[in-house]
Amino acid sequence: MTEIRRRPGDGTGGLRTGAATFEGLREQAVALRREGLSRRQIRDRLAVHNNDLLNRLLDGEPAPEWTERPNAKDDLRARARELRLQGLTYDEIQLELGCSKSSISLWVRDLPKPERRTRPVGTDMVRAQQGRRQAAERRAEEQAETRRRAQEEIGTLSERELFLVGVALYWAEGAKARPQPYINFTNSDPAMIRTFLAWLRLLKVDTGRLRFFLQIHESADVEAAERYWVDVVGMDRRQFGKTSLKQHNPRTNRKNTGEGYHGCLSVRVLQGTELYRRIEGWWYGIVGASS
Image (cartoon, rainbow, N blue to C red):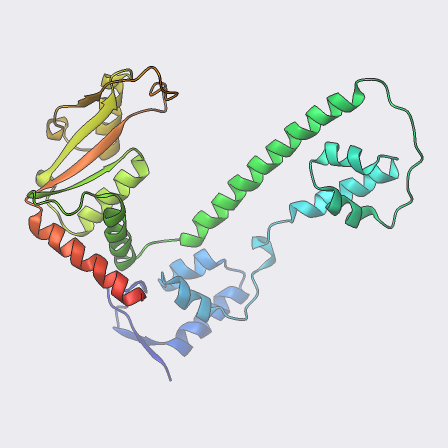
């Protein structure tokens, strides 16, 4: 009988009793699945936040019908057949639906070929523009759906998972190989900054050791950018140092203006020499473990 011992931060949520068997957990997970619960609901009910373990617990158990999303291609196929029966050609169906001719051919190949007919001048151009617009909208919807599903796959991060993410994040984006007594992480993405700060909280770094420095082009709205980053980090304005202005080169194509431009923020941890050495060791530990 396989025994699973849970510890805080190991991704399984911890147990009051200290231990549980895999078979016992699987029995509970299967029962909840057959009651119609989703993976997220089962994960929260059993406090199992390790995706690999959850997959093993639910192995062979189909998802309840209410979690299944309709296939968008089923609707496209039905519409393609309807248009074909109305006498439209493959080109016209493609313009109407924005899908490939190969898919259309597969969907309607058993239907009779429509008779040739004349169309008013300019009709093809209008339909082509409409088809391209619809195709672009459909691609945007599919991309958004892919991102949404991928986001759901992550679920809740355990402390260990956040720890490893933070180490890799710093080693990719943070300052390295410098003899200065602090660590420095710079990025323009507020989500990256928030994730890095969450990692520092996990390491119990005193917020009093944090300093923030904005780097931005002089052509931007500097005051608005400073207010933006104060809101992002949620720290005292007095922890922000002097903003560094970059000279704007009008010969480049970069605008460095507009509501979406806020410059780059540097998060500096004072007295960080020892922390930097640990980060370096953690990173090479990850490298060695993955080799």
